[in-house]
Image 1 (cartoon, one colour):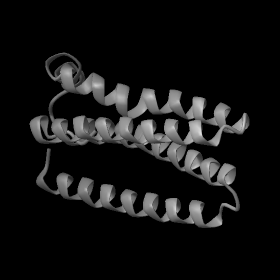
Image 2: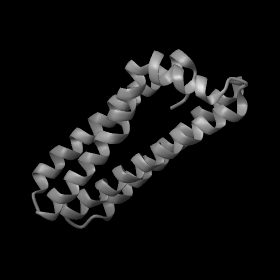
Image 3: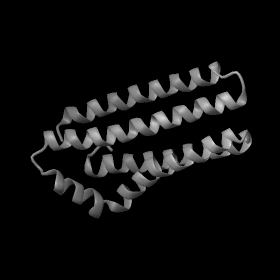
Length: 145
């Protein structure tokens, strides 16, 4: 990967973190009650997951365009040789938060806000684990996922 690609990835991730932080503050300040605040955090969580899926896809497309190595070889490297970090990255960074978001939404609809808050914390921890695996892949194979 070109040296400037890593810099662009860092800039994009920093901008993403700023947008997420601003949205979190706005959703908490604008929420009139606990149910609305949890709904705001849930919307923020779903937006972050959707943005993460898009950035993974864009990273693979850019990688395919910038390198001479075929994308099939890159995917084989990620899925098989680095699979111990790639699959948990997808599981904890994408799949588990989506499942938990559905559980949080149904719990909020039942007006069990304390349980929904606990599930929200669990989703955030799962996202953090997914990000740890993502950083390892970035440093080991130089692919920002």
